[in-house]
Image (cartoon, rainbow, N blue to C red; front, side, top):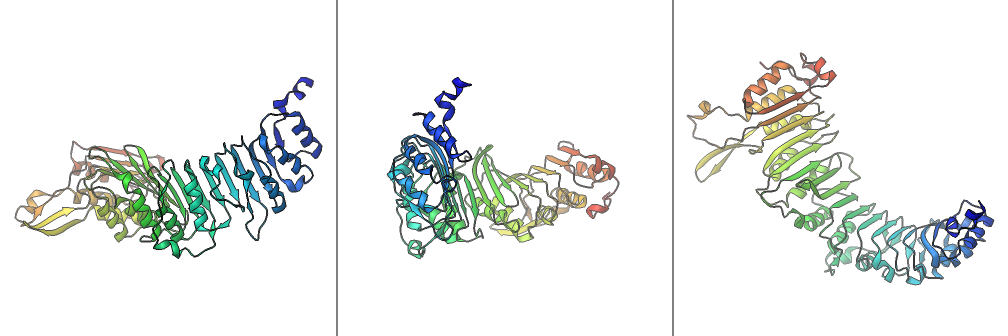
Length: 454
């Protein structure tokens, strides 16, 4: 035990839960080894100056302190500091500090809560890879100066950051683009949509794919417009590739060949607004690209116009899946839209087509819907040639669904399933997997609002 106590690396954790005496012993016995600091100066006011005297040895630091204690963080450089989590206990205003005399060459992770910087263009910011700014007041100009300095930034979080000046001066003003080629994740929460849009407009972030917003995300808002402009280059998809768009209750995931290229979260969705983000994203997709569309949401409370416009914008939907929908009329509305035919005029005359004419795969997994609606949708998309032979219509028959899967959740009976298989034909892959509850209700359709189809 004596050998261990005399071993300097054993004393490299400066923990504010310890007594003053033990803290002094830790600083002394650690000699010149790097320190990991977790400290609240208000609990050890007499030891705090001594801890700050060793700032040059700090490797990681998590500090909670009042305004007076912040001043000691300006007294020395931090040449080996890699991670800093700094929180101020001041509640009425945001104190500012000139951290480490502007010198912390190895600092890569910085988290500031309720405290700002005197110099938002300090040299040490050029090496920051992760930046979290929380509950502080600053100016939009200072934030843009900070981003311009953080050339190595990979993750950015602006949480409840308020801006002091009127942002209108930036609205119609050309701002030199801020190059952040390494940034792949951005979160803006508790900020006005207009301000968030200015930030997005001001940065060049070609590789950013993970977006989280806790502000206004309505269609047509400046934020959505700015986001669509920034993410358009991500949709340079080759015709041989497939784009997958997954819509959740409050998020949209877009992948290319199973590789995510865009993730949008809207944390203030009181109802599923994710479809609006999906429409904005799909508007940037090149026509002719096969699209796999997935609804993965517990609440599918989307109306007819919202779903139909989403499917229209999505273009060449070749695969459609519905996963985990428990409430809402959106799924039954979706089935009705897929069953609809449309007529339109062309130079050759009156034509007829169906929604998503290239749809080949359809899957429902653990979702509640009407078996009758499923039968109608399948039947409507299989036109009978004899009924159209005398018509002047030019019929653009949809591609027949060749893979149809229902995995639990529907109260379909055996007769209904046989009818669907008969409509799709012997070459189609049909898969009906029932759970114990579903198998117990094979002969009943009351829960889904349907009856026997045959």
